[in-house]
Image 1 (cartoon, rainbow, N blue to C red):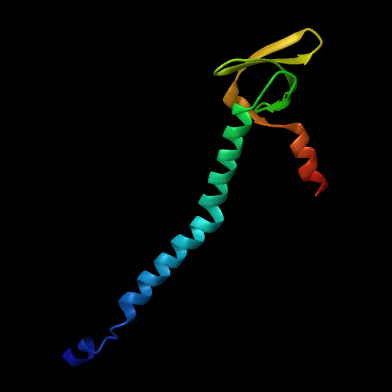
Image 2: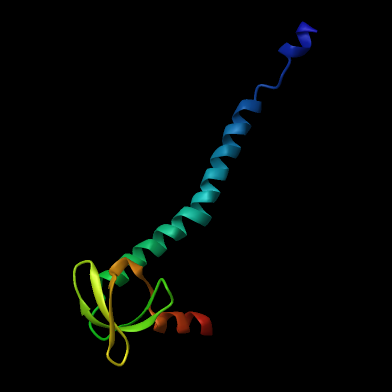
Amino acid sequence: MLQAAAQQPQGAGWSFWIMIAAMILIMWLFMWRPESKRRKQMQEFLANLKKGDKVITAGGIHAVVKEVKETTLLIEVDSNVTLRVEKNMVVADPSTQQADEKK
Protein backbone atom coordinates (compact mmCIF):
# COMPACT_ATOMS: atom_id res chain seq x y z
CA MET A 1 0.00 0.00 0.00
CA LEU A 2 2.88 2.31 0.76
CA GLN A 3 4.44 1.59 -2.63
CA ALA A 4 1.22 2.55 -4.51
CA ALA A 5 1.21 6.01 -2.94
CA ALA A 6 4.87 6.55 -3.82
CA GLN A 7 4.31 5.77 -7.53
CA GLN A 8 2.23 8.90 -8.40
CA PRO A 9 3.18 10.55 -11.69
CA GLN A 10 5.74 13.34 -11.32
CA GLY A 11 4.36 15.61 -14.10
CA ALA A 12 0.90 16.06 -12.56
CA GLY A 13 1.94 19.23 -10.71
CA TRP A 14 3.25 20.97 -13.82
CA SER A 15 0.18 20.24 -15.95
CA PHE A 16 -2.03 21.85 -13.28
CA TRP A 17 -0.01 25.07 -13.34
CA ILE A 18 0.08 25.13 -17.14
CA MET A 19 -3.72 24.86 -17.24
CA ILE A 20 -4.09 27.68 -14.68
CA ALA A 21 -1.73 29.89 -16.72
CA ALA A 22 -3.66 29.08 -19.92
CA MET A 23 -6.96 30.02 -18.26
CA ILE A 24 -5.54 33.35 -17.08
CA LEU A 25 -4.20 34.08 -20.57
CA ILE A 26 -7.58 33.30 -22.15
CA MET A 27 -9.38 35.53 -19.63
CA TRP A 28 -6.96 38.35 -20.37
CA LEU A 29 -7.41 37.99 -24.14
CA PHE A 30 -11.21 37.80 -24.13
CA MET A 31 -12.25 39.88 -21.11
CA TRP A 32 -9.73 42.29 -19.63
CA ARG A 33 -8.01 43.48 -22.82
CA PRO A 34 -11.19 44.45 -24.72
CA GLU A 35 -12.60 46.16 -21.62
CA SER A 36 -9.40 48.15 -21.19
CA LYS A 37 -9.51 49.17 -24.85
CA ARG A 38 -13.17 50.24 -24.56
CA ARG A 39 -12.44 52.23 -21.39
CA LYS A 40 -9.54 54.02 -23.09
CA GLN A 41 -11.74 54.92 -26.10
CA MET A 42 -14.44 56.27 -23.77
CA GLN A 43 -11.94 58.44 -21.89
CA GLU A 44 -10.69 59.82 -25.21
CA PHE A 45 -14.28 60.48 -26.35
CA LEU A 46 -15.09 62.37 -23.14
CA ALA A 47 -11.87 64.40 -23.32
CA ASN A 48 -12.66 65.46 -26.92
CA LEU A 49 -16.28 66.54 -26.37
CA LYS A 50 -17.03 69.98 -27.77
CA LYS A 51 -19.97 72.29 -28.34
CA GLY A 52 -22.37 70.92 -30.95
CA ASP A 53 -21.56 67.22 -30.44
CA LYS A 54 -24.51 64.85 -30.21
CA VAL A 55 -24.46 62.55 -27.18
CA ILE A 56 -26.56 59.96 -25.35
CA THR A 57 -26.62 59.96 -21.55
CA ALA A 58 -26.71 56.91 -19.27
CA GLY A 59 -30.44 57.56 -18.83
CA GLY A 60 -31.01 57.31 -22.59
CA ILE A 61 -31.44 61.04 -23.23
CA HIS A 62 -30.35 62.16 -26.68
CA ALA A 63 -28.94 65.68 -26.59
CA VAL A 64 -26.58 68.23 -28.10
CA VAL A 65 -23.67 69.62 -26.09
CA LYS A 66 -23.99 73.36 -25.42
CA GLU A 67 -21.14 73.90 -22.96
CA VAL A 68 -18.22 71.78 -21.75
CA LYS A 69 -16.61 72.25 -18.34
CA GLU A 70 -14.04 70.17 -16.51
CA THR A 71 -16.46 67.65 -14.98
CA THR A 72 -19.88 68.70 -16.30
CA LEU A 73 -21.71 69.32 -19.55
CA LEU A 74 -24.60 71.60 -20.36
CA ILE A 75 -26.74 69.72 -22.87
CA GLU A 76 -29.78 70.80 -24.84
CA VAL A 77 -32.47 68.15 -24.93
CA ASP A 78 -35.16 70.11 -26.79
CA SER A 79 -35.82 73.73 -27.68
CA ASN A 80 -35.14 75.80 -24.56
CA VAL A 81 -34.62 72.68 -22.40
CA THR A 82 -31.10 72.37 -21.06
CA LEU A 83 -29.65 70.06 -18.44
CA ARG A 84 -26.35 70.02 -16.59
CA VAL A 85 -24.97 66.49 -16.32
CA GLU A 86 -21.73 64.91 -15.18
CA LYS A 87 -19.35 64.15 -18.04
CA ASN A 88 -19.00 60.51 -17.03
CA MET A 89 -22.77 60.02 -17.44
CA VAL A 90 -22.41 60.43 -21.20
CA VAL A 91 -22.17 56.92 -22.56
CA ALA A 92 -22.24 57.20 -26.33
CA ASP A 93 -22.00 59.18 -29.50
CA PRO A 94 -25.08 58.42 -31.63
CA SER A 95 -23.16 58.72 -34.91
CA THR A 96 -20.82 55.87 -33.94
CA GLN A 97 -23.73 53.74 -32.74
CA GLN A 98 -25.50 54.08 -36.08
CA ALA A 99 -22.29 53.14 -37.90
CA ASP A 100 -21.92 50.05 -35.67
CA GLU A 101 -25.51 48.97 -36.34
CA LYS A 102 -24.99 49.10 -40.12
CA LYS A 103 -22.03 46.70 -39.94
